[in-house]
Length: 99
Image 1 (tube, rainbow, N blue to C red):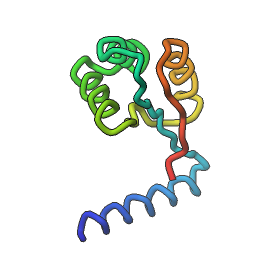
Image 2 (cartoon, rainbow, N blue to C red):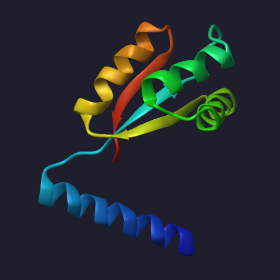
Image 3 (tube, helix red, strand yellow):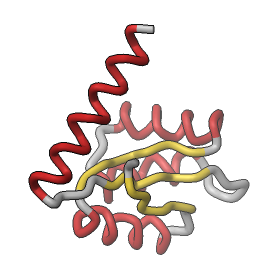
Image 4 (spheres, rainbow, N blue to C red):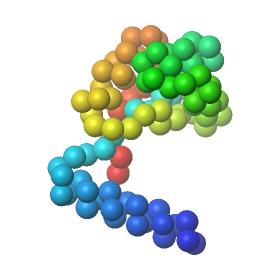
């Protein structure tokens, strides 16, 4: 129950921040596919998202096991070119507004 309350407080603070600054936060979400290898996904996350190798490998495993993983968060202007780069490398990705 405490976790739930804490999560609610974070969302409330986030909503206040969005209203005060006009800044909306987005996530770059990477999706699982049947085509790309772990090595290719890891290399792309290191190259384009500036992950270290361990972080990139963990994200690749999350994508494999859960079907998707938010690999980076921030403003749309930051994430859109990263998403395009991942798409150009044959990965499945999308920029999504954090609600």
